[in-house]
Image (cartoon, rainbow, N blue to C red; front, side):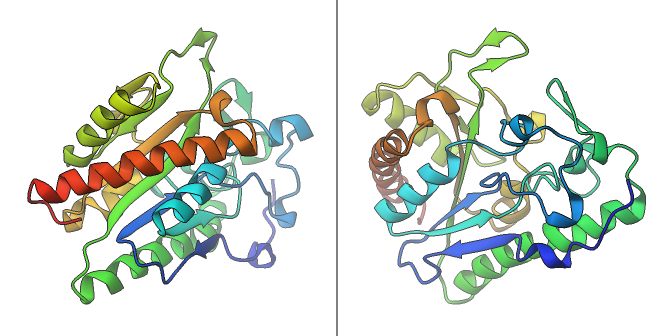
Amino acid sequence: MSQLPLSAAGSPVTVIRADARSDVILVCEHAAHRLPRALGTLGLTPETRLAHIAWDPGALGVARGLSRGLQAMLVAATLSRLVYDLNRPPDSPQACADRSEVFDIPDNTGLTADDRLARTEAIYLPFHDTLHGLIARRLAVGRRPVLVTVHSFTPVWFGTPRATELGVIHDADDRLARIVADRAVATTGLRVALNDPYSAADGVTHTLRLHATPYRLPHVMLELRNDLIATPDAQADMARRLTAVLTASLAQLAAEGVPA
């Protein structure tokens, strides 16, 4: 496919509560299913453009609820991950995937190096430059952010049902993730698993690896089964439960001598 300029797509990132007092920075890389007009439909049906391959259904609603509950900044994507998956590095084939799960993405087939570069410059770099800048400014004034990324996953994967309802994932530092997982097991009633349905070995912690690990910042990735957050009410309820989990977990982390 001949790629058109992406400059008319608007900013690939939005920041909510930029001046929030909390040291938590929430990130939702797969918040949106919007495709830039320049790229048309990517050869997909309307139904497929709203499917999980295009975004993480429910994740943004939960992240917004967490932002309110924690009074925390939220950095969210505004474009579909089918254009560029912001949780993948530029050298990953999955950054601009031509197939996701059982779906082909026709107009991502045969992208040239220039096509990939154009998407990287228009989407990946502005998003991650924005996030890095927010973190760096806090570090410069003596604040150490806590990075919490919010995702959702399908209840069935290649025909196999998934029992996990909340996955708690980490990159190099497992301290906060283990506390969050234990707290969630004790208080939420959810089936909670550490590093399931994904883990760092699956390449899903790019954002954490890029922004948290180099600065030794506490971090955790929350993966919610999307049938549990399919409505605004369900998203609000999940956000309330996870706000309590994160608040208590951060207090425990601080009590153990890790600033948060």
